[in-house]
Amino acid sequence: MRDRNAGRLLLSHNFDVSPELVPPLNREEFAAVFRDHLQIHDGISCQRIDHPHWIVDIRFPMDQLLPSQVGEWCAQALAQKRRSQNLDATPRTLVLGGLKTTPATSNAPGALQPGEWGVDVVETISTEDFLQKINWEATVSQRSPETAFKIEIHED
Image (cartoon, rainbow, N blue to C red; front, side):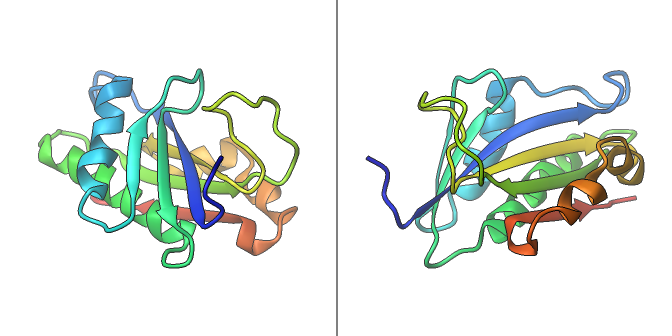
């Protein structure tokens, strides 16, 4: 049974950059970015999961942290990883979170459940183009503000 005071974020990776410009991260490397970076924060656990879409399961104390704060740390972690690689082209980091408010499509352990956050961690050359491509503004305009967040890190 899940702790009712624990928040859950499930992370996926949306790599929208040419592999010639930026080396893609495999699932284990992607999970390690967050596991290594988030371990400094009390009460947060982070692990790689086996699911076709979701890669990382992050648990955090909801009475102490907001999902958007954990999302901010995730954005910082990936941006820091890419900076450490000294790439010719550094991708922009975009973290898009949405609270699951509809019934679950599966009861599998790695599946997103109502009350949990699905978070797309995006690497892209243009956040504006990416957001337009997925129709982000229309999507969030139909949600209440506390059920979605967007974090952008632009480093030029």
